[in-house]
Image 1 (spheres, rainbow, N blue to C red):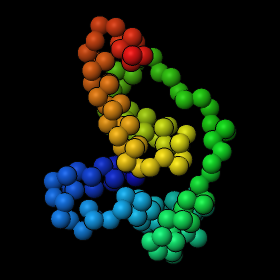
Image 2: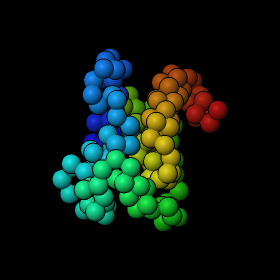
Image 3: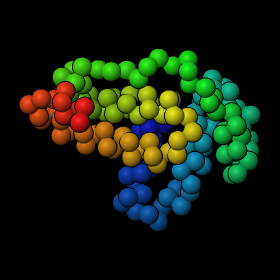
Image 4: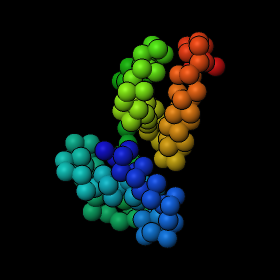
Length: 140
């Protein structure tokens, strides 16, 4: 849901940069979304950050991120043929899952970098899924 909301805001801002939400920092927009999602702050132990504003809230979220990602399994590898089939049928789901897996393994990465990674993965998928040797294309 967060990815969808952030992408909607991004698309609105591409169209019209004068919108109020386009003047906000990405961190602030994301943290406001997290703050307002029912049960999410409690689930991830961020509720004490939600009453704070601006820099204090950003710092609270940052200090409460889990830096140790060693508990995560290795990045999931999917058969390239299946990945292309899934991409053609459920593009948004595939992109969101990829973004989620990258984000949770890199908890301190800057949000625009994640969106760039997702966009780049989409370019690669579009290109490679048209190729004869899909696996080789994805490796390259």
